[in-house]
Length: 378
Image (tube, rainbow, N blue to C red):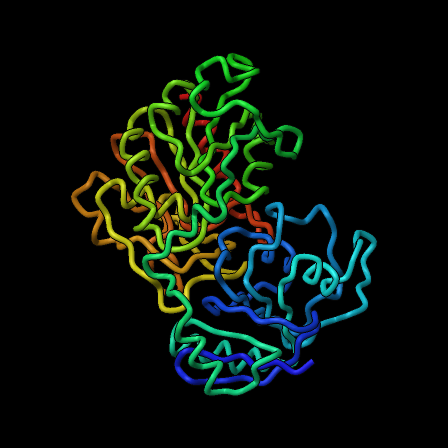
């Protein structure tokens, strides 16, 4: 089925839909991962975005119920060079097309993804509109220009679960009680396991799997949970998750983090890293086309080692804005020297802009979860 992709700057691309008729819109970005497309599709950090895969053949190993990072597909659209309709993998339970159609997500192929990626890299990530119904370039370009921009957009409340849940044996177990009834008795294994509150700004399941493997008892809370509710629970540590959109409008989370600084050890990943930077008086800015892929080189300034990392973010913390705030820079991106991690010299706080839990990607940075555990034990 013929389709048209239109960018807000007037560039258009002819393509085809492999999921049937439909229309979608959002910020178009690219991901350089060679595998892991199901993890990409279900990563809440992609909310509001149309994702282009630079690897040309996608769909060859199908999908399965295990390799998911949330309870649904999160992307606004999925752009490929060539869709593989006949999956071959012993874990596969369905084709990619069937998976996308089951959740009404538009899948596009026969697209010149190399040309699109080069255009985004040069001009920057921008708003896009895709349609199988309206194939008029001028009309689609106009509609692309009407798509809300990512700057100033709070998407955390779109993806954050409104009901708290425990993470037990690799699965969420939702609680019936609301946060008003929470206190230190909420923990089932207090004294036997370290208790961790995980703030859900769009948390990936593999982060929770990594925390559970370290022996933690985990309670995942909605993004709007107040500091006094968390303090009433008396956790051993607080984790700040990844998530989508611009960190600056997420003021409720920034205020909560500020109130909790110095309370217990705190570890932030991706959006959690950015929110911590803002809570400590720093500033954030939008990257030209972001970091999205499983092959991003990051240097650990504490050890001198280079880690190949998995990343997915369009904003970054301004390194200069953290000067004079008792913050030590611990990690930098070797492609563009943007900030990838810091720790506070007084509070028990540290961060990573990238994804140590991978899914997809390398496991070079898994040690950060062990550091979080060691910080709580100390």
